[in-house]
Length: 287
Image: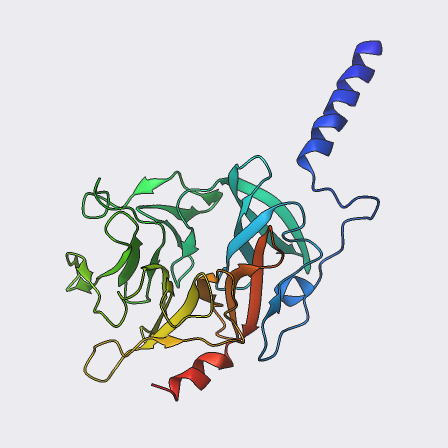
């Protein structure tokens, strides 16, 4: 009997270490769309502050197309990175850890592939497959891909921190993957460019960059696809999004309603912010 009590005590201790701490308060109940959060307007605000970026650094958020799974990356106090998910079950959101973070994860528009930089995972009946490699075209020693994003047509747009922090594009033509090419100076200008997001219909491209006339450490920019297929001039997304700190990792939800991004929430921590995606249409008139 004594051994059984010891086992139970150890089990409870392990569960306590693996659970999220909310001090003396109970973990908040999250119900309804968007983790039960009140939607933002034209000015960005912190997303789900009662459960995110409290004891950790959370960012790089994205939803599945059915809006029932919410993924993000987490950096713990000891510097370890993980991929975390909230899943909606019976209208309630429950948190679990998928595994260690690989690259800057983001889903393809159909939700069946999770892109992980030069790697990826495929959705299976039981969850996600093992991590696979995109192949020699992207797995190069002289390239450093952080975030690789895809359109509905299969076009890849990705950054490269080993080659002067540039962004490249690779299209599918007749089912064959084209060799990646550098995007124009409209995109690849500034101290660096990184963390791109291409719209599913390829009508715009969002990325972050540090430029001379920016608001702070790094700002979010957008470029709209022109009628001739080229990318228009970079437009700073403005002071309703950008601050004197570092804004990064832009993303538009699959329903097209909200724009998510990483932004400081304190002097020592960064968190997930969101804003009405109408801001993109407002910026479209400025091109």
